[in-house]
Length: 170
Image 1 (spheres, rainbow, N blue to C red):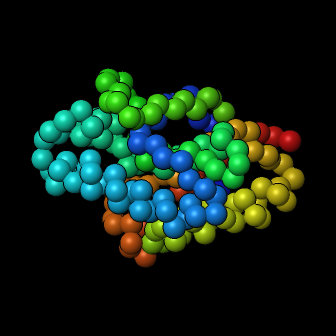
Image 2 (image 1 turned 90 degrees about the vertical axis):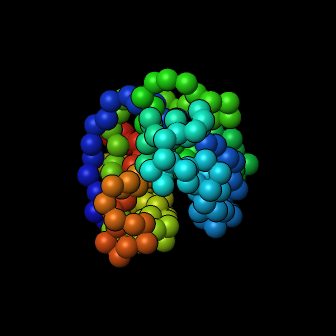
Image 3 (image 1 turned 120 degrees about the vertical axis):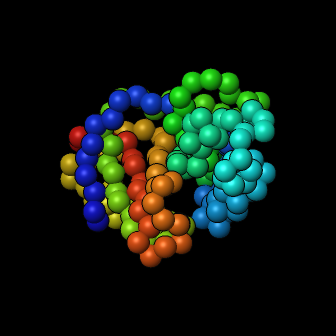
């Protein structure tokens, strides 16, 4: 698997949150993205000025650059955020802030159409790479999906995305 270990400074994300079951998440999360785009983002994605606080937050924080999985509920459920890096400003009602501490991250590049490519790499990380890794272990309860918001469409065969997982030396 193509990865590198990279140190990252603390950072905050802002986004729209929903709780998912592990069993149905891969089918349901893409629908959540579609729902967020349709409800909150289509106007600004069309190049129009933000018409409300949600659209302003999307533009100001590049919401849609990250998908964040936060495993802090238990019972085979987790929180998921369609998010962007928080740059300050208003946090509209119903949106969530989440802060990542400073630390090392394993960054896995994904090249190919999404959500299939990213989901495949994510599955391999947790079924192959982490369980058998002699050097690193998971160091937090949240992971990040990064989406290239500038180059190409998610369905392109050469689309670039990545999975970031917090790690520490064993």
